[in-house]
Image 1 (spheres, rainbow, N blue to C red):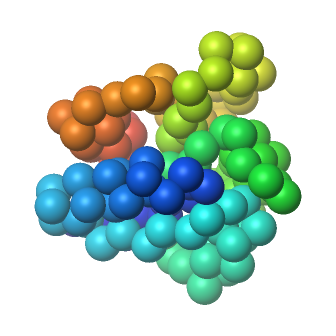
Image 2: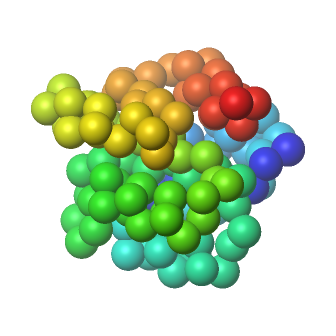
Length: 119
């Protein structure tokens, strides 16, 4: 399975996603924000970055831009509960695989990850 970095500032969402992906057989590292994600990416390698868009410090869009430049083979999924942020992410279609809308189910997040990894 894949090594996945999850960047999410909401502890409950992070724990839910981490458990779901680990249960599906993936190796998952969770960090609380975009700055911590940059540190983890440098220590990588990861096959997929799953990041929230709205986070303190470095948001998910800035993180996706940096990660896609530094790690072009890595897949990127964004998550958000804000429709305005989904529109902002729309401009990144060439860099990201998909934006997953919150709230999502265990099956939905696992399917989105599987789809991104298979693409």
